[in-house]
Image (cartoon, rainbow, N blue to C red):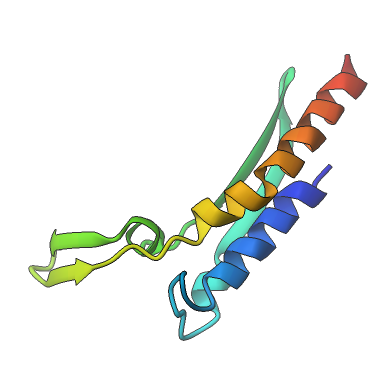
Length: 103
């Protein structure tokens, strides 16, 4: 069942490697993307995300002044959204199958 979540992470990492996603210089940001599928009582939870602080800014862009007083006008470089569009249906099918097997 973890195949869909792992495939989603792999696609996010690929999308972060160049346009239309961000051109990540090092592999640190790409490596920060993780997935986890686990049970939370009767619920099966799939989580995909990053702990990297730049993740939100890269995906959605940022215009303004940050907490350090630096001015930015960064356009969005979607890499999570396109991956969800491509692999979200697979993940949903796998989660539905897992729920069906447990009932």
